[in-house]
Image 1 (cartoon, rainbow, N blue to C red):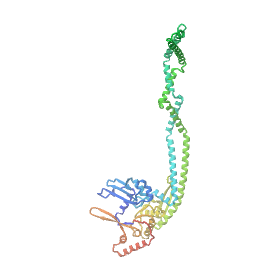
Image 2 (image 1 turned 180 degrees about the vertical axis):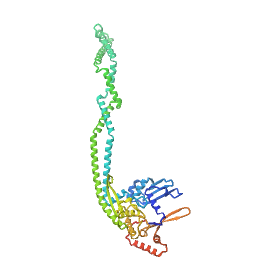
Image 3 (image 1 turned 135 degrees about the vertical axis):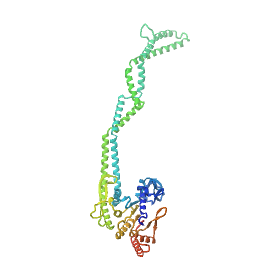
Image 4 (image 1 turned 30 degrees about the vertical axis):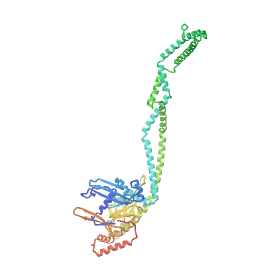
Length: 539
């Protein structure tokens, strides 16, 4: 429990906690003349918190330190486990540790998300599995929509690629290049370009060996006649015989050359196609080579790639129908998981509202009406429900969402009843700023009893002005303001024994030596000691 005179600085503590939670920094938090304001909190490192932090904290760490620094210029820095972090990261971690409610500060428990979490917590442990299934189903819907959108977004590009692949494949298939064909056609073109020259040379050589005209004797007929004469003298003179053999060989060679030249002439006459057709074919082949890789092999590979592209993109309607079916299946699964969540939430909301109403009657709000409304919203990762906590504080007053309730005291008591009725959250520290505003007497004692119930198994920090509430605390601290010539300082000190009794006397508005007030304070402490033991109700 935290107590102190009005103006001592209890609000400063609340502001520091809000800053540590990742709240908006304020330049006014920095003391006049100081370069900066700094707030730091040390927390027990639980297993769930270690899992949330992951590699942001050393494996051997035993505690977690959160810190926030605000300069006099208004700049701010956040730290998680000694490492620089964003305010969002700090808020993510801090929200797993502290639930803060105050009359004038940010109140996490009145946010729609926090209200939904309270209802889900009241729905039992199986709700965790339902939430996981809903998140998985929503992600499946999102992914299916993304794939379908990508298919549609690429429609124009897909059509362009299909048209291009079809055109290029048709061009290649129409020309139908063959391996080595370009080289053969190049050689053929050279022959056709010099056809007359080749024909004249071959004809002259053939005629020189074996002339067609009867009155012209070629090398063949002359050598045959000469060979006959030489063979007539064969074996007469041994020195002539080798020359005769050489002549015979030459005559045979001339005969073979003549035959080959005649055959070459015949081939020239039967050359397939004219020069023009060869030039056209070569032009087509060379165009393909330039466009698709430089070799016939590369051209054929490009044709295969075009066929693959057409196979992949050609049947767009089938692909879209398949994606639409996948989306419909995912939506159906999401609807089923959302319906399961809604059913569990309706049951939990009814029970939770009943529990809150019961506790409100004990907290001086006997005529208050509290209900939990569920509204259908577009399905998301947490299902298809929005939760509104609605309060009618007094008869005749309009019912309004809890976040719009004007009275901080009423709001704090509703939140206390909510947290008490919902249970759970043992790892969360609750900070309650002046939750006793506007109440007193027996209602204050009832509020203290609710705080004790809330503190069972968790840590609760409560700023209070009521001695009936303060007397119930397991731990008591007081905030004192010291006004000096140069500066004003606020300090916090832990109280025990007679120190607690003295603080209760002050809270009763009596002097330190007031015997009746002292007796009253002692009776309050004695009554508190008779209350059932609780764990970790700290302030």
